[in-house]
Length: 307
Image (cartoon, rainbow, N blue to C red; front, side):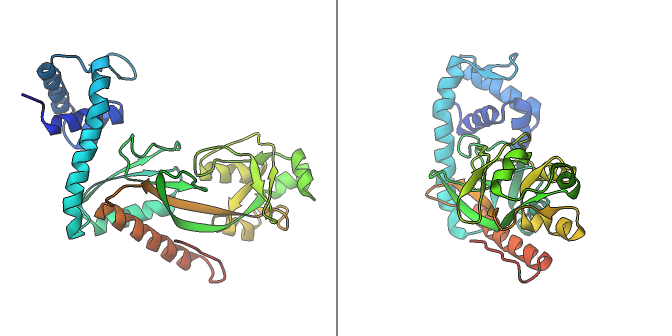
């Protein structure tokens, strides 16, 4: 007798999560139960699928062959159920969300969405790296910076001007840049773009870009802010996030007539035939939530653009 589709789905989840323990949490079943089921699957097939003693856990050749085909079966099965259930338009079922570190505004939305959609089972992970949506079974990821990949759909949820800023103590110590050429003598703290790529170039007001020297690269916006406030260098920072610091004098703009960019955040999801009702509801609600949040916190003269 062939193994059931549920056993294949559990096997695929173990591989995607990297361990039986993490897969058990995602599937909401006891670890011991999941372990017994995988042992039973191996007995039914007559082969060893997992090298459990290796760290990290690895697939045997037989396991690799099964996963290559099983994950497609699981996705096809999921798509079939989605095609039927999407017709009632009710947000329900599993929704896996990937967030970058230090996004407290979106944390508030996660709680609001969970309360409003009790039939949706949210699985939220926080990861600085850019996850592979399809390979890791993630429905939607929030990414900061421009997204260029054609294999995903990116819906903008937030944007604002970005300026170069520094702490007064840093400028007193190193001097204030008077031109773009002066940046070559300064520590410029940089980050990653929406594809997770480090490009040490800053946008200029005329639509061009200038190369900078970057002794510190970080993908966490909170760490970036702390580094700038600590006087470690100059950084391009979203206006919405530095407004209070500018008015308090904790940060000052550097070359505001020459350096200007735009900070953006996107909800990214796989380009697929069927969009889950819970995914559509999550993204639509997030766009509305961000617009409402910024309207409440930001003066009316500030620009907000969400598509």
